[in-house]
Image 1 (tube, rainbow, N blue to C red):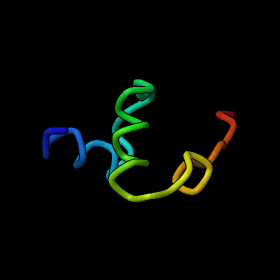
Image 2 (image 1 turned 45 degrees about the horizontal axis):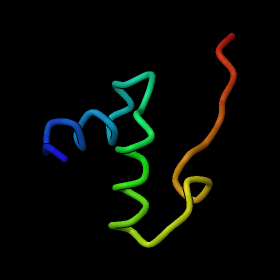
Image 3 (image 1 turned 30 degrees about the vertical axis):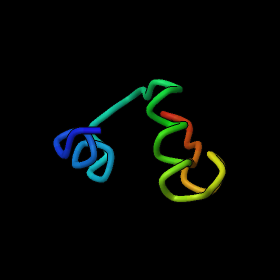
Length: 43
């Protein structure tokens, strides 16, 4: 995963994420998707 993509994730500048990216992050951090994702409705 490129540093620029990690930066976009960190700063909230994305609206979608590929499952393959999510899997890679979870494998690297030894966590589950629910540990790093949060749902918020757009008003």
